[in-house]
Length: 638
Image (cartoon, rainbow, N blue to C red; front, side):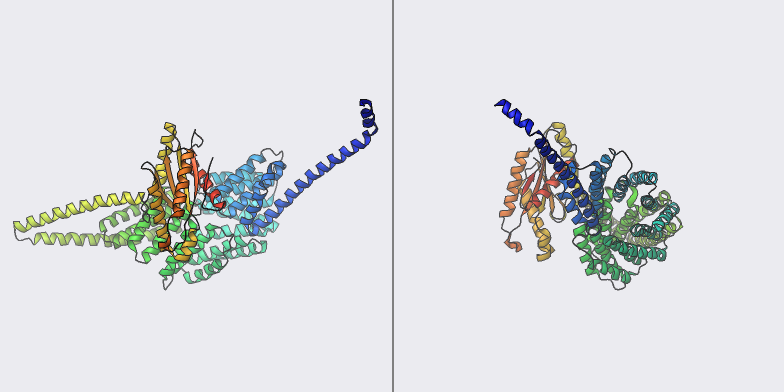
């Protein structure tokens, strides 16, 4: 039997080897086809990113599972396109992370690649957009070195453009102009429309900084035409946005509004939240400053901008929005509400991590002095004006402003000085009135009475000061709408509880909570119903917590709960009870048939998270999973 098998094997050896060879060839062919398909998909993704970055990201994520089976060059290219798409959606931290992954993989490549330079530029832009200019400049320079080593004019011009932008942000206008003109020369040589659009846009911004508004407008118009020819719709809209901003800077608000209206009509589902927020915020600013101010519509647009600002990563954008909102409220003569919002702007300013927000600080001081004056607090207004002077002088010295900046600063200082003189005159008038009352006293008895009254007034003033200090502490810690802990206080307590839990080796759980379809509630029933819903959810959430727990509003329709000494199982059970309780609550009083929440749960146990920010981010990611799985769900990190 065995010999028969051997005989059969030898007799058919050629046929068997032929079949095995065919199978091997087919397998290799299939693998090659897979690689070709992947590269073709990357080409489609890059083309799609020019018109619809959000759709490009969806396409890229759909092929993520097969990424590790591809050659290193294809993986690097994948992260290059993904980081660019994230950047076009203003998701800069995600863009930076993708670019870093691509650069790490690129180290395994034997030769320099255009991908390395492009990844460096994208990472640099993400850092620049997050306010880290020094790191961005270093990354841009690294990318430029790679581009020059390959003698690639297109990438060299891009690197010079990026560096030129950093230079004007650092107020080095002369060197910025030299660098951008070098980039322009290269771009003209290779006739790259998209690159010419970028460079003209940056030149427009530069000339806007130095007060050459007409020249700036010419560059923005050229940038718009170049981007249209290159088929980059979103970039073309950004250039048009710069044209509108230029009109507004020149106080041509009616012309600015015409362009803003065009941009508003061009908003698409894939338009970034950053861009939409900027359009609505600028429309509000133009409406309130035009010849016939339309404060009601300005307020409507600034509130609409706020819905998109909360989704934006850039801290500077949120701060700028809050300052503009205060300007609108001040124009509407809603002075106390303006002052409350100014406190929120001050809290945002306190979180700054660079000197990028100097002008916002001056604006906040200017507004605060004006509001204090209107509300009759003259002595405090004088003190604020004094601080404004000091900050203005420091700003001029530190930033080494050019002649144009000095003129602007001089104008602001003179305006502030005139206001300061008025305030001092009012204060002196009050002092003279008091002196006159004292000098007209006819007897000791009257003087005693006056002194008694002054004592009572002093006591009343001290009581007001103490009460004001308590209210100030409360404002900085409590959300004014819901009465629960606010965002700033949540982050402070979260850091403290995390450190305590880590030190004592105790579990610590965090909830990230979002009201489902809350925007639809506002759109259908109005903001008053939405506000009442937020208040009710805050009450329900707080009632379900222990005395040691913290329940607060993170912003918009988002809440956070901090549960010390609570392990994963306990946290998940409490989250389910909270979700079920809100779902079963009768919402008919608010004309709502039902209201539900989604909850993301993350738990610190056995040193699985290094700090509170990472734990909070994990809870936010779980919240996203809960919403993606259909909402009205609880998702946990275990």
